[in-house]
Amino acid sequence: MNDPITFPAWQRPHWQPSSEEILLQFYVFGKFDAVRVSSTAYGSSGLPAGIEAVSHYHSALRQWEGYPLKGAMGRMFKADAPDAWKLAFDAPEVMVVRGTLKDSQATGYLRDTLGVLAGMLDIGGTAILDPQILGLLHADAWRRKYLVRGGAPIRNHLLILCDSESPNRSWVHTRGMRKFGRPDISIRNVPDHAVDRAGVLCEKLVELEALGANFSEGQALEVDGMAGVVAHLGGGLDDPQFNNTYVEFRWPG
Image (cartoon, rainbow, N blue to C red; front, side, top):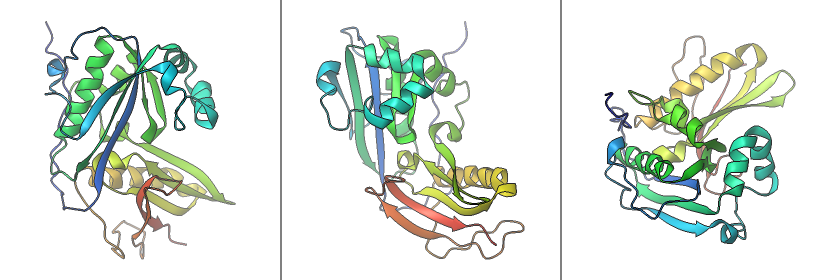
């Protein structure tokens, strides 16, 4: 019999304390058995203090102003993940898992929360929505993405986007770093020929942050062939692009 797959808790070898808060938020849709959620098989000791799970009838949740399956966001989910959207939309119940935590030297809080989400799928959950990365997955797809032996890569917990900024220039940026209590990454003025390189750089920067690093205003970024690139801090929870603070770099040239 194979050992059960558990979620890892990464240590943060680059950790520098910050005033940022960690925010976790998930919606689990389904029809749940009237039993206690068991998460120990996934290496979780239950939700950490500061994170709570609240059960709602879906009919009541539809009246919320921020209900995620309606409006432009709902249309996006329906177009991008129609099977998961239907499972979520038709589900009679929703568990809202949400809370904030102080900055932490380890990520046991994320391991424990993901373990509870996996446990919810075992008792009737059919789809999970992560609004921080605009992701909606049905149960099997969620397990394939996150319940990975040895741990899913940090990249799976984030969203890296590439948007047109001007003719022949793009903007590479992230969403989801609030899960780690860190600013999102923004790289402006990326020429078309360098988009893939900027994406790889962005992935490396968010991994550094997820493992605890912080950037300071004016800090130089040491990258081969990219002189004069420095960090600029901005944003905030009400920033429409990130809903988070961000660290911005401008591609040279």
